[in-house]
Each structure stands twice: as C-alpha cells, then as structure tokens.
Image 1: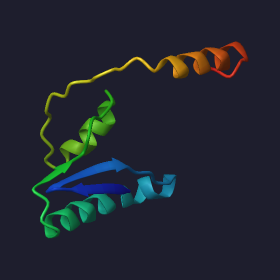
Image 2: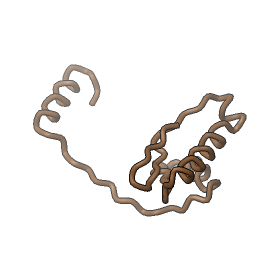
Image 3: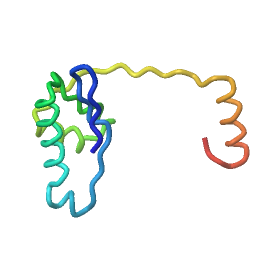
Length: 96
C-alpha cells in the first residue's frame, strides 16, 4: 500500500495483494494500520480516493466507515507534441 501524507490529509494512492493475501484479509489489516498511522501522525482526513465505478471496491471502503463524496473529473487535451507522438504511435501499431 502507498499512502501519501500532505498537510493533514492522507490519501491511499495504490495497493496490491496476492490471492493468499485476499483470502487471509491482509489488505484489510494493511489498510487498518495505514489509517491508524495517519491518525497518529496527525492527519485530519484519510482519503480512499475514487472507486472507479467498481462496486466491490466501494463495498470494501464502506467497511471502514467511508463516506461517499462527489468529485469532479477534469480532462485536459494533450499538448500539440503529445497529440503528434500519440498519433504516430497509433499509426505504428503501438496503441494509444
């Protein structure tokens, strides 16, 4: 798990576990410890970040007493150089 702390705000940025870790509940233990650590470090908030529309992730977060909050999504068109390079990558079969 990677949890970022900044000015009283902790954000659970990313985490991963193995099949065995999921079976044993290791992810829950790690997240619990991260929350305790953030509290002890004086963080006023622990942000679990968006669930990406994944119901299982939202249910997991609700087990920690998470409250859902609306967020705004901002999209910015890439720079001219980025668009040019992305087009070239697609043309060469590299996806995009």
